[in-house]
Amino acid sequence: MRFYNSRSIPNGFIIKAAAIRKRQDGWYVSIRIEDKTVPDYAAKPLTEVNKVIGCDLGITKLVHLSDNHQIENPKFLTNKKTKRVLKIRQRRVNKKLKGSRNRKKSVKKVGLLHKKISIFLALMYVSTKSAGTILEKE
Image (cartoon, rainbow, N blue to C red; front, side, top):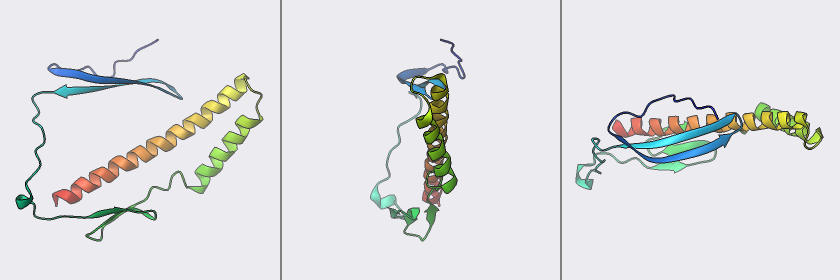
């Protein structure tokens, strides 16, 4: 198996865990590392807190905040075009003969579309978390 070392592990870091995943386009290794020089996060006591924001998870909007700020719900998976493309690709897989090379290629296309959807949703999750930290700092 070929291996591409995209980033070297810095000196002083300790490998805590590794996860190996097989995705539609190949194998991936995620390594969790720890640096002892970074201090742990300490929570503030309640007496030092100036502002509290409540949040509610919704269906039409992803998050409703008590200061009337709303974060939109990602519509990629519920998008008509994405649903139609997924439906067509799955139908193409169903029409192919089981065990054939063409069926494997069609299955790979369906898997790549699912991967694209999961990457989009993960990016939306990260951007939502960063928006929450920006609101928290204000």
